[in-house]
Length: 387
Ligand code: SAM
Ligand code: SF4
Image 1 (cartoon, helix red, strand yellow):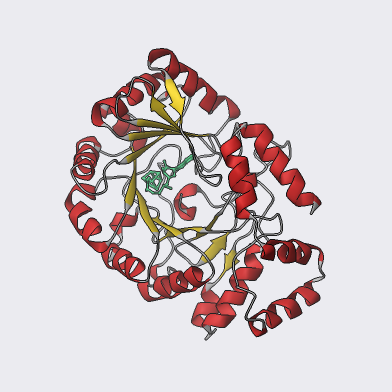
Image 2 (cartoon, helix red, strand yellow):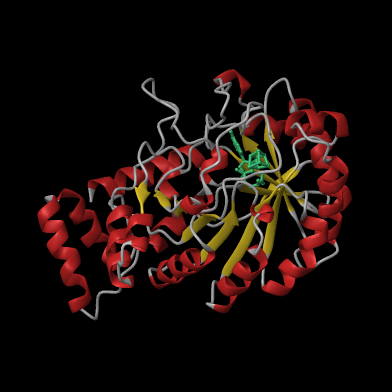
């Protein structure tokens, strides 16, 4: 119980977000107390507890961690391949992709999605690597839609989006996030190490002309590379009526170039935009990663600030990730991941998998440790995790 209290006060202190604290209370249900107690139980007792759970029909099996957070949001990486080499993510050197037989098949990914759905996952985001480079992703989206995923979205670099947008909409995709790190074509191509600006812009146009509008555009700001474009990006949001989200650079790049000085704090982004076009904060769900702002003059468009480094939102985290090779990651910065592939391929029943996932979520970390002196970046970089 102490954990619950300390988590809550920390999150409020950091964000000063009253909306968030209301959401936090709402996120607690009666099962939470049992799961928090499970944290302190010896492993053997825990195992007995979870083997008994199905015997109690009143106990709905959901995903809770031992810090009182309910997990409702799953990021599914469908590939570790990517057609870009963004400087803050991949290396210019060739990296080893995993052999195809180590990646989960579509059937395995579908089975896991069904199981996660029964465990209270409501939001699923399909990501990668670059999800659109894996053939069959539209069919997978259609299956997720048919099984009743409430909130179904995708993160993409946009390169293949213009030609695929219509099929994705027909498949049931509800929202799309597109990465765009510069409005200067030459700089964009230096960042992504590809000749791709025009194609990504066509992808954004196609999205804006579809039921997926307004697109969410993600820019990772890196000091000295694209931090001079904050106001241009905000102007782009106003011109195009889209949602421009600024993400702080995290230590998840393959080249290990991340430094604290390279991070552009969300507070700086806010004040620079606010001076030019006053912003008004909008309400947001406690577990949402972005603080959202509208333009006070009523111009369409929106700004989102995502500050995992300078204002961590771990106290409200509702996310876990499934990697393309079948590992569950309970935090972007987890030291260990939890392998479901041997279970999937070794004859485990759905019930076995459900129990395994519930137990994995109990291992979810209290928070990332980027701001502690002993922080060590995880071995897996962003392209192999899925954002
Ligand atoms: N390839 C797709 C894309 O770029 O949108 C999806 C996968 S990518 C790993 C998901 C998100 O992670 C993108 O918005 C990307 O900008 C972000 N990202 C990658 N490396 C990052 C880093 N070191 N710090 C912060 N965000 C990062
Ligand atoms: Fe590929 Fe996305 Fe990483 Fe860029 S950020 S290298 S597009 S996975």
